[in-house]
Length: 634
View 1: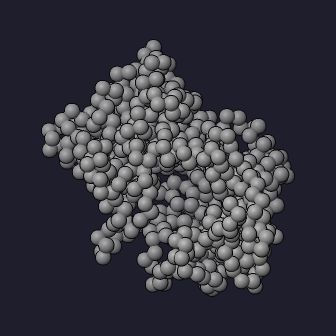
View 2: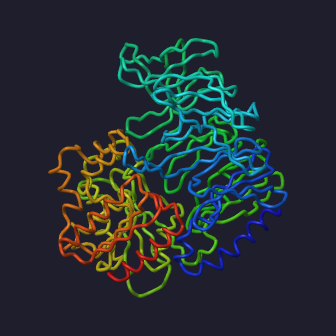
View 3: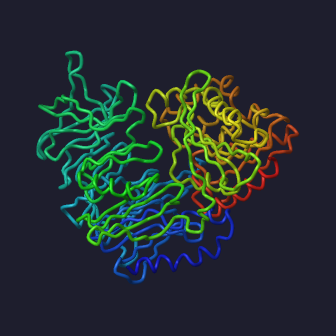
């Protein structure tokens, strides 16, 4: 298989440059997002080139790879549309002079891999100022020449049939304040959501025939018909059964199906649920977005429950082959003869393999971190505990492999979000610190996602309060268990985790010795101002943080207003293109500490970096500078 040779040869330069843990962990994954074409003859993947991703396409039978990159835009992901065209997801920062604000603009392009040129479908003035990108609705598997996309202009959301050959488009359906289009494989719309001013909520409009009229779906509750408002994710092929998300009696997210009879929804049956976790997502057929093939939830790893018997057997076989590892089927050809899998865990730092079912062979393609010394990777272990107020917390604790008589220093790594979560899949930042001799603790504090709506809501209004205590008490238990050196503990986090790092530095001086924040929030009140500037009025932060105008309460839990001369050594790192948490959140914190006479703070501004460590160069700077800073103080 000549593909393996081509990818392996391109690793030579990578290995030559990766001569330290900073180099080997701090780069973007060397190869990521490997996907196979519908005919099974080509693969495409994202390849790290000088700290940015390019798209590489290559024939499995051999031949020269084709490389496509962008100067200003960042390539975030892609999917095969047909055998010669790939849909690219991209972002680009844009400064609006009228708004005096930088926005992250999301775009979609069609890359013809045979001529290596991209077509921009929505480049007219009507769509130029849209922040969001077009959404793929259906690959239209029965029509190899077209796809179905949705996009908006003003309050109108419309469906477009796009010809892949030349990028031309035809508007086929539209409505005001509409979204969540569900179509069949011919592109006919059968259900969509509409915001109704009359009832001030979203309703579902449905028809059972392609030429029929749309009517609101209803459901019988307490003997009365009400609007059916749940988010429908898929219709059955006969259009008589719909699938949608719902919370069960334990507040956990479950997938439910119901029948439709004369526009009335009834006979709900649970399709997928867990006793502990939320069902995280739907798994659609890679080549047919109209078809549900399974569900995904995150336990210690992402786990896939396939409703499709063939894929269920393949997944079971692969899980038996790769033990204690996350196994993700990323794509497959139309015949399902060649399947691309990604394995991720302590032993597999993002490895991609092609499973050829006809040959019965697993053929390695590439690794995300080929230069990492696997002997330094630590085994991630569950560390569950109960807090002083009875809250059960799931956490992860990783010990360094290096043998020493001393207890290791500890890096506390709270995740961002805060409605996110950590798991056991490969984490480049976790394993970097482990390779450098640190233990790492990652708590899924209250407010984290994946453990039910009640658990997520229990974090609302608890920034710096119960959410912080969950972190603190986990650390104290590790100290009590004698696992770590109690005098050498540092907090490292990004986004909300950066907030925890700053709050710990200003308010937990007896427990921690230093903190490192990337893209962290220092002043809670400024979050609402930035939301308004970004034209984002979701209301999420009003629930998560507190009332926008209650500055007395917000200041009480804002590191900026808690800063003092006693604040612990604090390294602040922030990208100047961050549109999620603006760079002034770190800049102002650093200046405040200097004004107070605290000279233990350092500030690094990363040119061109966003909120997500999208640049390999920024990752290396972060790891190098954070390691220097932490070693200096603990």
